[in-house]
Image 1 (cartoon, helix red, strand yellow):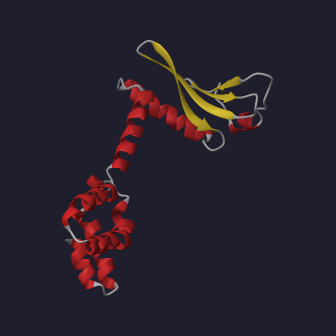
Image 2 (image 1 turned 90 degrees about the vertical axis):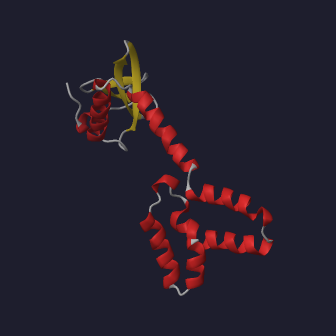
Image 3 (image 1 turned 135 degrees about the vertical axis):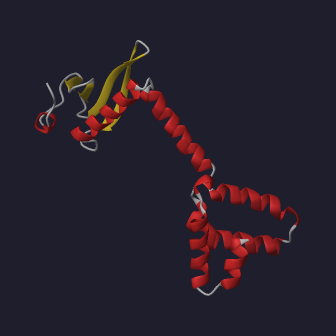
Length: 169
C-alpha cells in the first residue's frame, strides 16, 4: 500500500527503527531517535543494495518517488544508481579543481618567475579585483566568449579602458 503524507507525519519513534513501505522498493525508515529517512532497496547484478535519498521533510514524498523513478530508469539501462551517484560526485569535484581561478593562479606563478614583482602584483590585483569575481569559480571548460566579453564590458563601463584591454590579454 502506498504511503501518504498523513501517514508519514503521524509516524512516531518506537523502541526500534521501523520501515513504512511505499511502492517499488521505496520506504521511509523511522529511527528510534525520531529521524525519518528515505531509502530505496533494489537489486543489481543479483545483489541487494540500498540507496539513501535524504530525510523527510526536506525530501517530500513526491520528491522521494521522483528519485526512485530516476533510479529505476538507470536500472532499466543496466546502470547501478549508486555507482552513477559516485561518478557524478567525482565529476563535480573534478570540475571544482579545474576552475579558471585555479588555472590562472598556476599560470601567474609560472609566468611571474622572470617578471618584476611590481608587474606581477599589478596582474595579480587585476585578476583578483575584476576577473575572479566574474568567472573565477567557473569550470575552465564552461567559459565561453560571451562570459569574457561581459567581464571586459563591466570593466570598461567604469571607465577603466586600459585595464579592460590588459585584462583581455
